[in-house]
Image 1 (cartoon, rainbow, N blue to C red):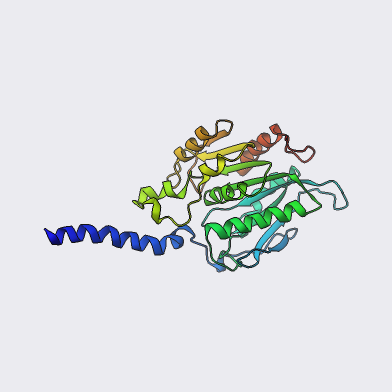
Image 2: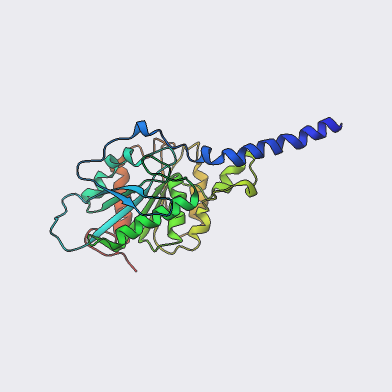
Length: 275
């Protein structure tokens, strides 16, 4: 009897100890640097100043933009999923750039060529640095900066909107919190080091919100966006026929949905965001 009780006590303690030390490796599976690619020919490679060290970012200018124009335009700040690098992303943003949006792809500390340790705090500080760079740029209208995050990047955007005023938020395949997601692995809340409390962040947000999710997502289930939508009734929820890593099925169609949403809220290359 005592042996059985001891085993019942030691098993969860051992599991929780393993989770405590391994969780960041599980949450941040950064691809190897051998998977890195060269930036597009028209991208500006930036090194953002952050407490963890310089963080790489690629600024993709709006297509067809007149270099001599003095009128600032809108921008999208994008935060990627936990198994990606900014290197993978530029081709996805052609329609947004053609519509007059500049795009800033921000790399996480500890990912790609960016030094530092990947944590919720270090990601937040890096995204804030990216936002501040855009807001200070004479080519960018600080009132038309859109925050867009996919998967873990959606949780990362949640940390940004608590620090800076963005014109709109787009969350794709995003969870309500890591604490909630960890329950599927029988991990109690007190063990979760990086919480990414998206639903808590949205309670303080008052701007336009678009939620996009696949109905066959078996990594971050659709119910996560449904809960976010219910907690933020003014949001829009678009459900697509896809999973987690194959969503959306068509990026051009996806951008039509996003650009229509932004246009409805006055965020275009020719109009300022609605106050």
